[in-house]
Image (cartoon, helix red, strand yellow):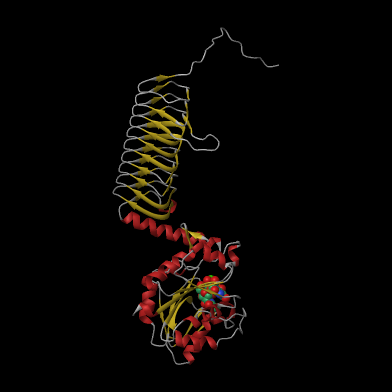
Length: 456
Ligand code: UD1
Ligand code: CA
């Protein structure tokens, strides 16, 4: 089928009362992305030029957050039901086209499933996505007569108890011809349990109109899961995370426990990568060959070179690590950190806007900000770059082979040349020349046989 003729409407006007939230339901996040974005992405794979979103509750927020000019926004002022929602789009469509109906809160639907639906849609009839469910509670039931679909009855409208036992349910997703939809939707009413104009009522009307209703089932059952409350959101999140973890594991990544792995973006891995439990990957991350990520690390938008070892509970954002670096445990790369090969950053070291030369080390308890640091530099424990004067961020430059003693303060702007030695506990206020030693004169007093105060 030619996808050019397919328009796609995404229903997203509902408030999502059961989320108990101030945000529209579809703006809640699934793996770091708005729920509705998944639906938009699959719609774009089908026909990116004809996507309509029916919005209502806090719709301005929806437009603002998504900021996507390729979408046609259709306001449904009052949420009078799914049939009424679809009717809002029809004035913009041509009779000879088709309309695929998707739900903003059903994010895992795949293109392959939708293609199944397109292939079974009868001429002038309806292609309906249905599933057999062990727990049909709450869903619309598919009524068949000698195998032919004749009607959908919403759970709340079931009066005949035998219908409650029907396990084939309506997913809500369907495709039909625009010309027919106009006619069918004109004929639905809101005489039902919820006083709503149900989209599902077109099925009976189509049947009476001698049009066929054919069903297809999704490639994977999880695809039709909807998000109506925070439990379902967590459930869909886990399903999605497991899918992502499986793809990575099948490509050779060792994930110690896929149930404790979260990818909120994209992850590209080299060979023999190991990811321990409770790791979170955000935005776009690349891990080189043989990289090991320890438990509890959060890595966002960063590149980590071959053979790097990131020890537990390190947080790395917007950074770039060359090969064979060691980081953590408990290191924090706040933004724009570049490590050259073989460098080593240890516990409780925070870095921001720093480049560190090869084989340099800062192994304990430091803050390094706005600094360019050469190769083979040793930064002693407790060293701090004083990079802020209260108004401005100021730079520190440290040459190759510099040794900085523990607990030094480097007051920026500062230029420390190569081969300099800074004694422990020095406050460095002025630039330092090649090979110099810097220390602060401190008079040391030793009092003999000192008696500590006794309790009064
Ligand atoms: C709907 C189906 C039901 C199906 C179920 C699958 C109808 C009448 N029922 O029920 O057969 O089993 O989905 O999940 O269609 N919306 C609007 N405007 C409205 C009302 C709803 O845009 O006036 C949107 C909602 O934001 C939501 C979607 O339509 O994204 C579905 O609405 P909802 O009220 O959740 O329908 P269900 O009761 O789940
Ligand atoms: Ca729903």
